[in-house]
Length: 300
Image 1 (cartoon, rainbow, N blue to C red):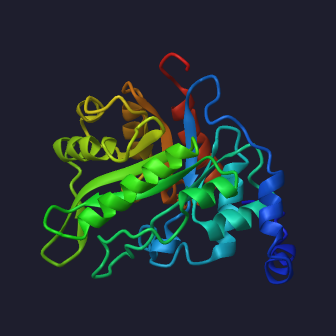
Image 2 (tube, rainbow, N blue to C red; image 1 turned 30 degrees about the vertical axis):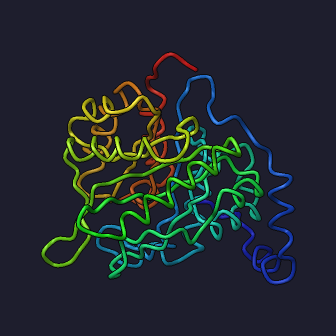
Image 3 (cartoon, one colour; image 1 turned 180 degrees about the horizontal axis):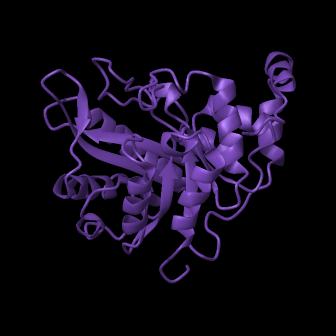
């Protein structure tokens, strides 16, 4: 775990020089979105802003910000990791710690659907907007887009996501759309339909959001028939790691199969790699990065 982070200086800057965030963003060394192999490996850390702090049996695993930053920094320093998806607070911590040079940075846009709330499916945009992403010189914005045909708030989420896609495209920035067909179970808990048919339908809906799809990428769950899912779109897709359940070797095997499907460009993984069962973040990240780099279509 990264143990050389200067948290004392981070706290000092936070309290006395708020302008240091914009200064760090202005001097950050940027890189192209894709390297020659056309693949992308991102770590995700936008869960806390939606109140989703649990990992496996530990309901507060992500509550310790300092531990999260140590794990994120360890991951970002591994050679196969291209960048990070997170909310402003996390990205600004990483900026001030000097961890985002030569990395792809995606700002998380809608975190209003707090986990377990009665308004969970009202995924309002409470994080970045397109102008904010552009002002920070980041590379794109990510939006969770859950679609519940029985919940009228879904249409507001779709409208907001469509606007964000168009606004990001106007800045020539990536719009990462994460769609699900969702519903509430008998206990009122939001669950996602992970059948290939449902995921393909969510892909069809998400692909049509906004006035252009030129800058749209999809962030999709790994399901048994990824070929059927990817047949629903020509847009590039990244696979999400999802909640870490089961044995890591089984998870890696499923990722490897899905990464071989045409149109899949890489992974966006958070808790499964940042909080592995054995605590070895570097090894978990390296294993996932090796899968991403193992094969690709013709480089762009």
